[in-house]
Image (cartoon, rainbow, N blue to C red; front, side, top):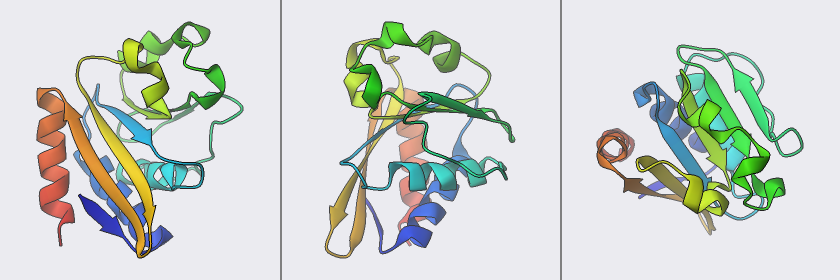
Length: 150
């Protein structure tokens, strides 16, 4: 479990995550509206060496960015959980990293190995709970928690 007291700390946690990502990694971001999913993604993008401004893909569903690895940033809230409405495999099995906001809505269509990050608003800021679904994501979770604990 990781904590952030403000937006800047949430971005720093995202940078830490982005630094450890490799081709094919999939992150599922869960949390209420306004929890900080896009803010965390801004940090992840920064950790991947992406200098572009990161915007929520709420209305476009997918935004692609180029960095150390390509970043596929999806927001599937508006798809209603219909994975067929987007070419999900193009992103999950592409050359980069996939970050899916509201990804829990696609539970049946997600790969066997992904890291779920649940962001909760707490009195002191945000609390992030990492839950690995597979061996690679467990390795990623351990690296992030070890480096983000201090």
